[in-house]
Image (cartoon, rainbow, N blue to C red; front, side, top):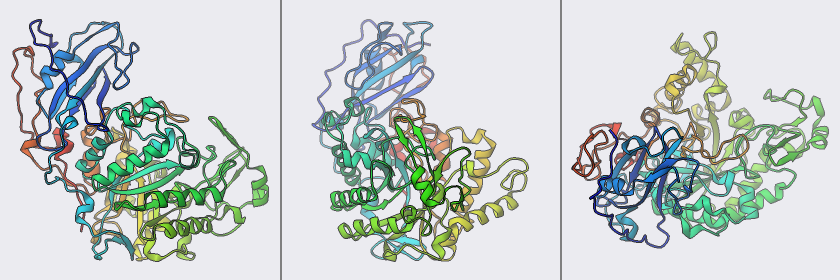
Length: 589
């Protein structure tokens, strides 16, 4: 039944103003989806006001955080929402909870709320889960095939990629949630490090950011890309979350393909010198932050083809001719039909295309500024190919080098006749899978040569419904944990792709649409889908612990009129609650 606003309901209290730089909490969802309000800066935090809530036609009025408007075809539901949620730490709302004032139209629910912690200092309490940096002896280093801290204790990195900055000069989420709130959610979900993606253009051009992209963080309005970058690093550092900075693109856009003009460490606008100096600048700028542990030099090195990609275009004709034209070496099978392409080589062929020397040059520039950082060296061919390391390892201090690989289901044939059909023959499929990974990069772990960070893997929200994804995840989870090369050392290091559940835009993307691989919901207050996050937890994150002080939720299925219904407090005894406050951090020692 619809929740009707009682005519005699008292007006809402005036919301206290947030502290400078704290930010706003906003969310908009289409009808049929839940909206989760949350305030969990400390165990005493709570929702103290809902200054705006409206339900109406999605295409009418502004939904920009702090500048919301009630649709002409719609109505304010502010009093009902506040009565329902005030005093709670977490409160779920859905469009069906409110009266439909615009029948037949595509509608959305828009809400902005205020937390007690926005206007009061956060209580100095023991963090649960703890800040990763608080239980480590930093800095970290590579030792054999694992990463260890300064005391020599094995550290297993289990993190998440926070994307978007490499596309729009602002990471996902800053339009709806305060930076500190997002950093806190990451820690509460159990991740011990963040892989933060950026473009060379954001650093070297340093453009003014679009204000609507930082609407929930108004102190960043009118600021430049590096100001936002600074704010992200500072927020993660305050939460004690380890930071891995990844140069995802040269130009700011969605990644990756052979036609995006970004497969190498240089392009028509940025030279190798520009790229190396960009890295020197980043290392120098952030070396003072204790939680800044490492860098990924170049994301997914791959073919670059003469093409047009959105607003970008590239012509590799001269480079392709120098590399040998159609006779150029192509060990990765990357030739693209009817396209003129060049490919990065490890340390042979045309000097300009040799990957290892370029990475060594950038690595030395970084270590000159910050000698304790880990240097991530990606595999070629979309971060799959590290075969050449065996005979020609990167010439950087061994304690500093971590290789990177990516793993996704579309690289495996899970068809009924495929070599990786887990349903048909689990033992044989895993043997084939293990052999494939070992050949490309797993041997570095099995033979104790160097650590390998799986800096990307991921699957869709509904991965269990797709046979290929389901079989792939069975294989990957076995290799990453109990049957892989680091089974006796806790499992491989990894970063899930990705945090945001909403697309940030870019070529081939639809800004604002569901990011089907993303962990967080549209409000940035908890996981998008239970089974999706549980699968990631099974790869090394602890299950939730029950903390009664952080479990108060309003019963969402009540049929009572909100004017008469008491707030019902429920103890949630399993991960069904999806409360990030309850998800403890895991660091395998």
